Figure 1 (cartoon, one colour):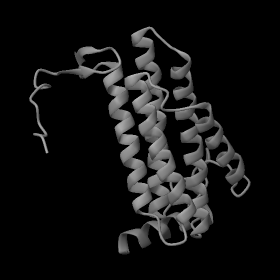
Figure 2 (tube, rainbow, N blue to C red; figure 1 turned 30 degrees about the vertical axis):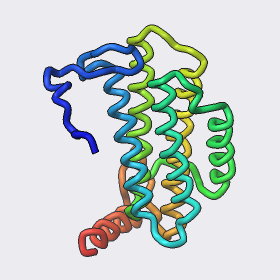
Figure 3 (cartoon, rainbow, N blue to C red; figure 1 turned 90 degrees about the vertical axis):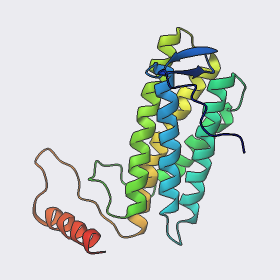
Length: 200
C-alpha cells in the first residue's frame, strides 16, 4: 500500500477533481465531498446496527450507500455513473414502503438502527444542500448535475421512510413531536425508552 498521508493539504488547500485545480479546503465543493463522505459513513453505521429480521432494510441501506458513492464519482469525473433508473428505483421503493408507515414528525427512535438511519437522513440532507452550493459556486449545472441533486433529495426521503419502518418493525413507537411538547403517556414512553437505553 502506498503511503496514506501526502502532506499535500498541509497549507489548507486540496485538489478539487471537478474544477481540476487546487482550492481552499473551505470551498463549497470540498464541503460537499466531505458531507457526502459523512452520509456514506452514517449509512454504514446504520446498516451495522440492523438486527436479524432487518435484512430487507439493511439491503436498502447498502444500495443507497452504493448510490451515494456513484453520485460522488459522477460529480468528480463527469461520467454517467448514475442514471434516471437510479432515481426511479428510489422512488419505487419510497412508494412501496410508504404504505406501511404513517408519515408524522416524531422524536428520534429508541431502536439504535432506526436512530442511526435518522442521523443518515439528516446528513444526506446536508450533503444535498452543500451540493447545490457547490454548483452555484462553480456557475455550472448540466443534466447529470441536476440528476445527482434529485437523487440526493430522494435518498433522504427514502431514509425517512426506512427510519419509521425500522422503528415500527421493532415495536418502537417514538413520541410525536408537537407544538405543545410531550405530554401524558407519550412523555412517559419517551422517559422509559431513555432509561432502557441507559440501562442496556
